[in-house]
Image (tube, rainbow, N blue to C red; front, side):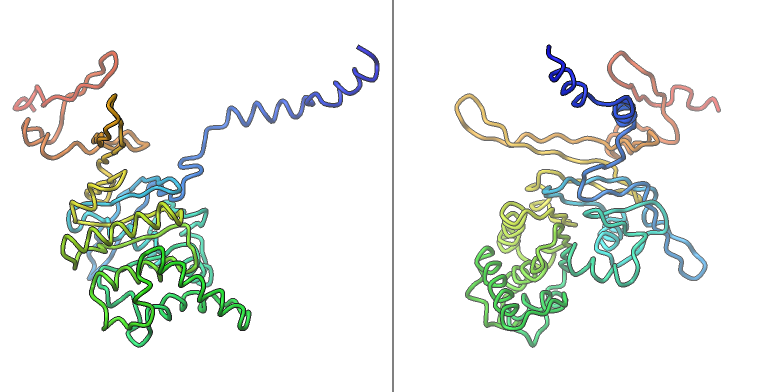
Length: 330
């Protein structure tokens, strides 16, 4: 090797300081939820009324990846709607951390929260009347969020807004509704226009609270296909709170919330057999939080009569959970 080659090799080799930094970076644990679109870490929300405190969220942990399509399910009072309003920037958690598309929901100022609701998340209410202004046409309703965003550009800006509205209406197959007001639409049509309104500013995250709750099953199927379009073609991360088993069964991931915590989730994936036929593989899991807590399915506990405490043993590749073998001796 010539002296010139040696000098070039020495210059390209990492310094001792660089090697130390690489070692420290490799040794540093990955942050919880790093890279996810939505991260909730030990999230708490306490409501007070007439001196009584109610914990709607009790240390909830949840991560949702960018581009995912997720349903949140749970009984009334489980905390799922509270979680959704926090993610939408309509409520503030009492403790813990929550980030959406890199935005810290606990640290935002009022001005930042307003911008967040206009640009980062789209939100759809269950009540169709809450999503649209009755005196505006569908096209005008869709253009409104872009106007409120505060960008001035004269005629050029108006043209871009009109083009964006037309693009969304075409994607959601509601172009024929452009000049209709909400009173001239069915409930399903209103919801599809509401989805277009929520996506007007191209937010990375779309949230929906029981969007099919007031619709029949056939119309609900059409609405859900619109969410698929938004997720697949527009690239939005979609989170839907629902009681509708059809919606919960059609998403890739269904997360159940119980007593203010994530309790279980169902993951679905499409598999192709040797004959080329596709089927959906479904598996249910219980959630393990970072403190080691799990919520076992109620039906399992009732089947085995488990309550108060259980015996736990470590096997070679699993953990055994059994009924308390000292019951009646304490």
